Image (tube, rainbow, N blue to C red; front, top):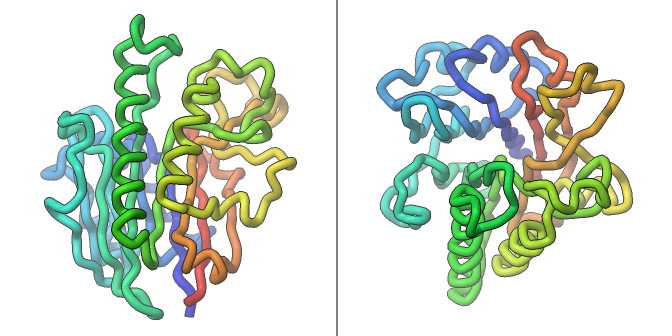
Length: 272
């Protein structure tokens, strides 16, 4: 038995609900983690999601901004009141559940880290300061969990809005001063990963010296031809699950769907 977990910044779940059916057809996931749902909980399209076979749902959303959701074919227990209210903002950027997975419970975290605006300066840009503070808090959280015995059978996914490695962007040199790939951000995300002893599931399959993207800007006249992408979407697993990684898929063709998100779905399959 394997567990197939997909993550996708859907950029409005109500606008792009029909595309969820395309995702399901292409990837056959057991669990879908969404970010940027842009939907208050009372208006979440539960019926449409249930029609796709996802009877178990955890949602945390707000009008017009942010929002995360976990959709599952597998029963789960939601983690409420256990994890931090990041930066004390209550802005719907994290949700977590414990999946009743075939090989035993799996703790699943779905994150949407702030994008950080356009100016990579925490003094001049409060959005960038928020992003750095968020990652710092998540690093402290990971470190505390590690000190208490470490993450066990845990998966962290989401739009982390940072492309940490040189080949996670189309041009390392040209993007060093662009938000998402600045040294202060890449070092911060690397520290967060190391603090929790997380294993990068996508780079488990794709060596660090190979290009790997999950996002292509809406600004590109022909995104596929220019291929100026970034890897902003991530899947991390705890060390005890790393040996069970079976496969991964970055559904690049989804960027070409009608009314596409600028992010594409990513799936990781785990055994055990």
